[in-house]
Length: 447
Image (cartoon, rainbow, N blue to C red; front, side, top):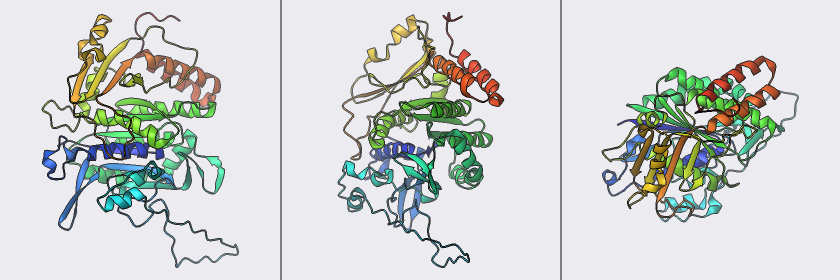
């Protein structure tokens, strides 16, 4: 069995990861897991506790202080550092001891322990409050010096220092990264018999972008040929400073991920927005752990959508007819004629597929290769109690690799030329132009 583990970087990412694993868990038949329509070993591993065997997600999660909450099955608050009662300081300075009250267990977790779960949106401030799975606490890491602030963050000792810049994240990784790779990451590898790939879910519009970019480089050093499926989480509107940080973070994903799937925040509620985004993540990953004979691996899926090219940016992401992607870098460059290199459609439902949704006949008439048109049918989307009522009947996910990334990359180039310092400007401009060429098709108007 080929395993896949998931890395979540940010509070937003961990809300999405929680929805993903809750949806996976909803497919289990606890009268006998063998009856499940999914292979649990792909995303979960067994944990033995005496005579009992349970499943825990194959996941490595990072968050800021105050963002984790109280983990299911835990009597401690993992986001807080323990205080040594015997600690004494020989100093002339007066030390003020600040004790934060423990985070209470959510009502949902209490009722879940009693096998009578009652869920309310009031239990969604922390992602841990509505998780149906018990994560391995040794795989959950916290940046203790930084405070979570409604999905953003600031330095705990100085709230004027924001957790919003690429360079902040790269500096933090220099302090935290090697220990993580040596211990948590390599341990996760050791617990996998045959690793298929990695899901990496990253908040691109904060310092997590720099943290994640450096992590990806180190992971690539460890696993140069493994498939990494990157999901970039973007906010709708960002200022110039964050746009420049976004460019660096996005390039970090493009340079090191086998495929990049951009997802834009749909609402101010991380619980609701991440639920929408998780439909895409769950549907793509539903291809990799199906018990069907035509199951595909993560590597096979990426190969089928990239078609042996360097194009690894998904230009459009649709859930049914709703577009979940937006321009990553709006600007003056716009594609007048859009061309689709490849389209993958994932259908989740009990009935026959709607062949008109894929629109393959039209794509074929426009020159899209038949190898680039793929349609998959997998098990219906699970409906865990913790999921908002946003899914009805059949679910279609459509992923296009098209010419759209060209306009984003060229608009990024214009911003870099105007606002990035000279010492890194030329290299970045050349890199962006080189990437943009991969998404050119036919006659280019400005040429």
